[in-house]
Length: 518
Image 1 (cartoon, rainbow, N blue to C red):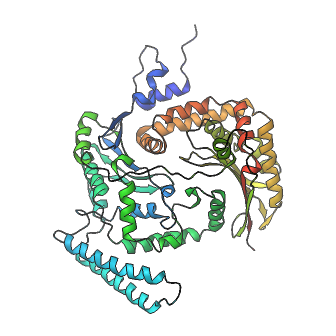
Image 2: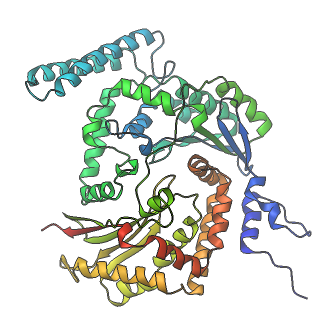
Image 3: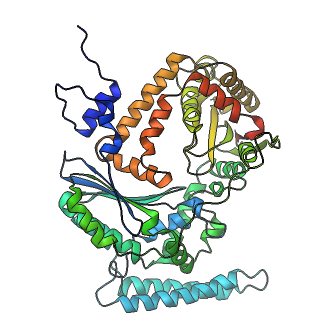
């Protein structure tokens, strides 16, 4: 008699979610992600997601905001990343010496007044008084030093988390999300709720202009990486209208001019309970934690309203959707050529829809198939002909405008390309046309599906699921994690050909060619 068999994903989910396996058959529907995530939404709009993982007396905590570089505008690019830094500078109650808050605020008012004078003077096209600017900047430096000596307690928030046994304390800003995270002992969860609620309501932005110099130095360090300017310009060319056109670090001209009032107004718009998701995964009890969440976050009132990004990239698909399905989109093929002291490369990008679109699953799988090390592109360009040292294809999973990118790093011998970029470009297009006309081998697609399955299951393991939940809830809705996985696993070779034909066309492309600087 044949023994009953479970699919690999079911067996792994049993392990990951800690479900006891009995002699009774395990049904796949009993292992749904939705059965293990508890969601609560406060009256003020704060979404709370919790997963119980009692393997260790720890809780992974994330507070994620639906805000990033795409929410910025010309003039304040980079402000989301800048805000992330400022949230570690304390609040009205943290980072300031006892009894010194009033003095602390007075010094910041004086700094703001002098910086406004500098800002107005620097905006002048003619007759700018450089000596006066130097004098004012010296005044600001002196005021900053006075504030540090008289009123500030540096790194108090970091110290509070570390003293409580916190690990992995950090934050990150991306195009679409900013998150603050820490892993704490289960008996210190109230500390996290208290500190993050305080940061949501009461940030005071101390050392604003000193930290602005730090942000600009980060930008300079990025610029020192060979090829940075080329990639930045390629991205700006690809996104002609969408705010994805600038990087998270922002344009230097904006960083130099952002002031504290810009930050205050930006914070009020986006860093609100109804624009945030609180994720906790670990040894927790929902009935014990929710009263604490209500205590610290429940009374925070949203001020105003944040909105989705309005501007859409005018791709051929956009024109067909807005003008009509029979509309013939204008042919627009863009190219960027550059030189840098780095490995030469060729990249071709195509506009694709956001992550929730039905075509994203086959586009994602197409990227995985085309860049597989057992696939035709890698075998031909890297192993057999040795024209490239690396090839890749990937579809983004963006909240708004997406991209499908194909690229190859050109092989060099003694710093000389073995073939010219034009040939590498032709070879990439040959594989693009092949993807449109020839179905993918079923064995290769199954191998990729096995890899996608393993990656999905890893993303659910331990407390790592916290990051997956935060990301998906911010971009769309957390339940889509499972639906997205199922869509990818259901993709057929015919689906791959269909999306290749639909999106991978020259009139929907931007090509970047980077040669080594001599």
